[in-house]
Length: 302
Image (cartoon, rainbow, N blue to C red; front, side):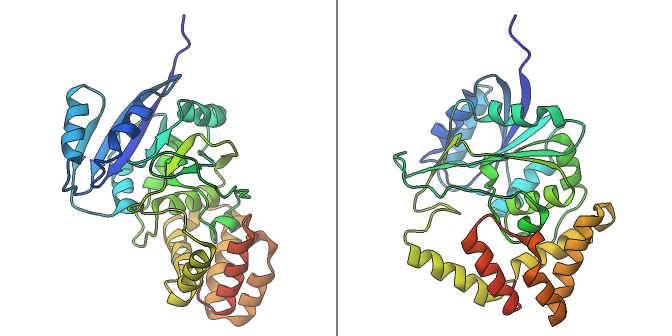
């Protein structure tokens, strides 16, 4: 007798994804050792994406619905908010390829933590648009709340999480949202969810001209974009912290409250900013990000 396969709901947001969508859907449908359901929200496509979704739906391979163009971060949270109750959830982009063990590896890593919120994420293997492997930065995150306030290391397309975490995420709807994956990791670490980072890549993360997020072409371009983000003063980190304060503060463990308080108070007090600068609890697994974060504190633009 075959062992019972765990059910997982895969949530995908599409937008003009006709070029690679079928390859990605097929890689999800053929996942091993799991029972997969797929719900797609189309974010206003004008190409043949809807035709592809209609074809797959007619074969009973997925269900989809359409909506106004919300952009990826809000589209994915819309999917999560309106999803039926499942034991596990996963996000999928429209243009990657999943290795056949991706979902099983993630579920196996967090299945013993069903009594508490848990989240799995993993390393990616970057490829060009023809799926030829290209050099990929190797991540070494610390998976702490302090780190999550300054470093968005977890791609949504690698995330698998349980219903306990979904309920926490859906208990508050943020007004400010940079990307859904950074927000979800911030909530998870703030609430002391069990976090697993897998250093093995279970996804081919395709880089092409229309990627929303991707690898920069050169080191010079990468650093230029990093500096511009600081000088632009969008203050993404600070606004995420304010949303956590508004949505979850009373539920947070004391350590997370302390970290959040210092992070927010430092915005208006130079003495606190010096403390923030020296506080090792905000240490980051990526040296470049950590150094630029310290610069943003000095400029009060974090």
